[in-house]
Image 1 (tube, rainbow, N blue to C red):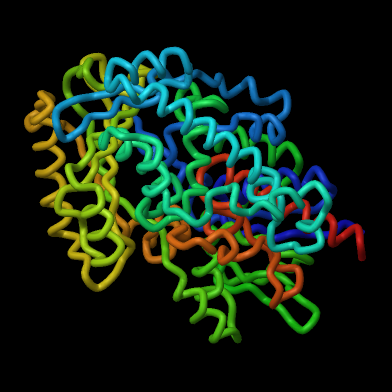
Image 2 (cartoon, rainbow, N blue to C red):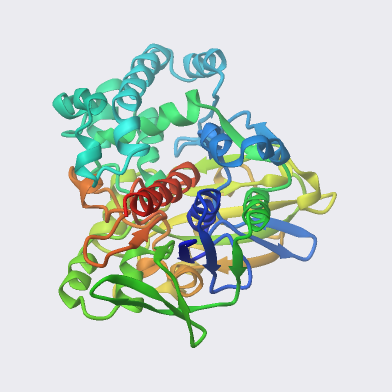
Length: 490
């Protein structure tokens, strides 16, 4: 008899899990509370301007190859060059590149000693990747029987080689002498919503992934990935129910029995939640008060304040991806994580997809996705004040670099931590799930297979292996594999 799975949430992890499960012979029904799938990886149109609302860069495209197969070519993956243009507080700027020769040339012109320093650092980053990828990215690390397999023993026995005892900042500072490059490579801790002054240096795996494993943009916008996943899922007879808000996960002593959505009971043998783990337990599951309190003590990741700006004019000094750094990075993260307030001088990220796809803006215009790091929702955060002051700061910092936009913003939409909470059930409005601000954070991250309720599974940025497009897709794959193994062993 065909086994059934109810999937809660139509984000990238939920869609990936649906595809893998359907391929493995399950009857899959996916429930999405919003009218569109994609979760935070979505799109918005403001008149003639089009915006991606989530990731703007794809790394580790081989993960997509495994999921999409021959359909991968439909995405029209394009290299991004430069990967990013960085603007520093002293007025200098640097283009980074996934072409190593070009990267070294740029670094040498920027700071002569940094080229050799970068080679040593990126080789260190590569070694971390080689040591950690199989265990920490592609395997369910909470499944002890799988973890102690012979091929994983070198990593487990030489744990110190993945640099877990230093912080990101301490490790980066040991390689680079130029404070600007230390700030640049500290930034990669934010890729999973963490603080570089607290997060373990194992996260220095990320620069290797970005620069050496290929960084891509999807032609016509990142949301095309969501649309392709939906098409593949539906071709496999996955039933996708949008505008269906799941209200309860039902279970008994034998395990899950189904879910309640829009007031209706849907039976299933397994439940895979792509909803934030903490929010799943707090909103959908009764009877586990102590565990809910334990999860609530886990530190959420960074959140963000997003301005979607329809800009009049073209700004050649800006590239597809741009970063304007604050003058005091440590203060910025102290304010965000320790004080829970919006940063007084935030770093500003700007993605402009019309640089690649001119049809995303009018002929004499650009679509700016502007993101500023913010704390997760807490009693110290004054959202109205934050919006006003950060808007002023962003326009000011751009002006200091010769980019005048005060009278060029023709359309605007603002997304706040409260919006991420309301739209996507993100834990306290966090963007990346849980932070990695401790040495044991990878092991504290909730597992893909729950131990409390039989046949309950999780995928997405708040569970293993973490946030970002390739990792959430892998989480969907890992959860699907665990469910399939469970069925086969019955």
